[in-house]
Length: 421
Ligand SMILES: Cc1ncc(COP(=O)(O)O)c(C=O)c1O
Ligand SMILES: [Zn+2]
Image (cartoon, rainbow, N blue to C red; front, side, top):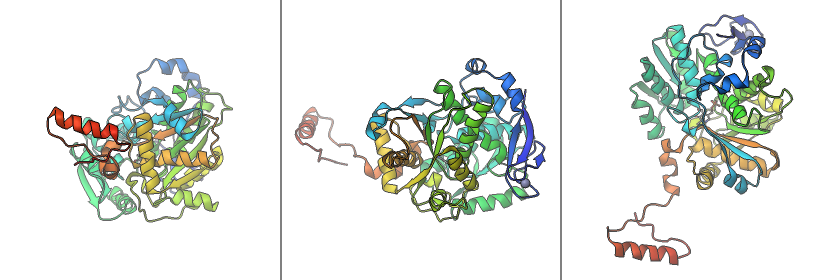
């Protein structure tokens, strides 16, 4: 049973049918899915959800599909980890990590939005799916297209990490690398989308695609025992996930799954080398001026974010804020997370950790309230970014005497100096 009532323009309110549309013909505002919340309120309960399989479709009344889901049957329901050692390092009492770095099947938050978009593409009868991507989205679209037997074209900027390139190619899409930034890729994809009848998950299916990001918020609430964290920090690139966390929490209040008075402040994390949203926030405006990205955090390097305006609105509305961090701080963030919690994230996650640290130090996030850091991507895809900051293996012969010598040196010295290749 579906509770979708159609699409509606976020700006002027004009209504549209449930179709592959994404902008308003009157005002060019983005279209958003509408639901019958009274109907949902009567039909869902915590108990009913608890009985369902542990995947993102357990919240299906709040997702925009009509038929049974076609993909994503193992996506979502990622761990919410009580991070005691990282909490201690950051000097806070109650810290959690929402770990989408282990999302199925391609290890980033994008498996949520793609599960919904590809299920919807199949409902609409598309045979070819596509996307404009900074890497993770291409990985997820390629994998889901393969499992659904759909044709697939993915568009990425040139120069991405090997893990991101091979991590799409293995599923057999046509990968097109554009000589330019993500923003050039996106512009071209809008033109291709107009000309070819393909399901571009983050262009013409964007209203459906973005709804999938709400499941990150639903899971956090359910995993906290149907409570909201007081604060949550997440990375911003195109600006999809952050406003959808806000929408997700609002919906939980509206349909009675959490206390209607529970507040949750949301915070945006960006790299200093690409922070159009944080720049606007600090200037006190919601006009997001484009920038040219220059950062190791390639997956969140979007200079002209489609939904930047809505990120700022959500920060204001929820009493949150945002910060940016240098590439060096991002590397420190990756290392801090790995060494305290045993989780290897990519630069986007390093940004999320480093920004949280900064916001705590600034007093923006109080030390005695509950905090969730969203870890949105996996470090095994971006090995080359951190290869130079880790110790290399000690190289010895297969000889006990050789090892004794090494061990002796290591335990005697205060710092290991033998970093043989
Ligand atoms: C790992 C990771 N984290 C966060 C984001 C933020 O995405 P957005 O603001 O576009 O939802 C992305 C987007 O590509 C990503 O790949
Ligand atoms: Zn409109």
